[in-house]
Length: 124
Image: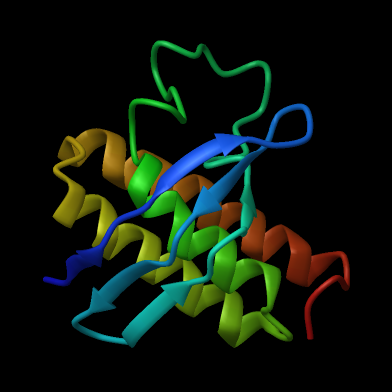
């Protein structure tokens, strides 16, 4: 298991986004330290509109876990980098206390999206 080393606060950014105030640090047991810098723009979790918000609300479920995932995805150059980001997300959700069924479902969703991106040629 990893741990949240340093948390940060957020303020409103462009519509649908928040901006970090201060650095955010997550220590992954498997992948090392992920530092999300001050002023990083995030939407916390990109959940399709057809999914009910009470089921996977990005402001209530896995909000902290979304930060290192968003950051790693933003700079992922290839499929392996995205896979790493997805696994850090899964690990962080466990550390954040996300219920197991929700953790597994959200991980499956990000893995399916990463796989889709590879199939359509958006990832090497």
